[in-house]
Image 1 (cartoon, rainbow, N blue to C red):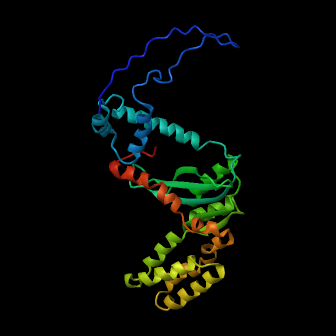
Image 2 (cartoon, rainbow, N blue to C red):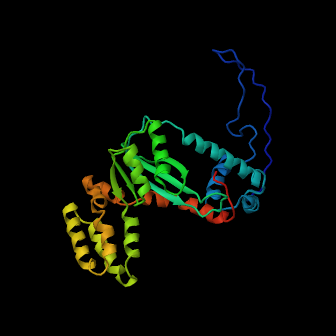
Length: 299
């Protein structure tokens, strides 16, 4: 509300010497960092606004009303930040995973609607939960669709950097990932995502049958134990198998990997049934790419 305020940093002749090295120390203000043109808080909010869809050319006119000045908010500043983020992403994808113990991992392919000279971008995402219950992003790479070789390259990269085989992997029915993980981490168990499976089943049913089918499927994955879930699956087959065998086959053919989560602690079931941790996390990425609209680059 006060607008731009001129701040003058006085020069300091710091004559202190380091007691051990004898090298002259340099005074650094904790209030006003050297060469600072905007508050660190503003620097923190720029990436968030960018990810939520504010165009790089809109920063100065949008924030000038709040800050009283557009200095440090030009499109060039945002471009410089994106270069910095790309360097941070490259460092992230080469970090060591040897000290980390991932128990469960969620995997999914995020398809982005950005026009490129080459094929459409598909982000291959792995999110994991460590033994200390902390959830974090493990790896992020762009692949050729969701092919087995693209997933295998990503999994081999994590293995080379020291990652041990997780106990359970949760993903949709994309065959590329499951083939890759059997080759790279053969001992990892498989759990199919119920959210994706329900969408596939409902797509094979007429809309008039959707309410009843949704309730019948909910009885399967919300059952109190595996035995009751298998009974609910048989009831679903009896009710819908005669008219829509293809829809029922999507459940009965994959029933073992759909009910794998029952072999783990009950408090984990709600987390292991779906890849929603990835869907919700990457909602902001989709917001950004919707605003971009025009052609983009893989970076």
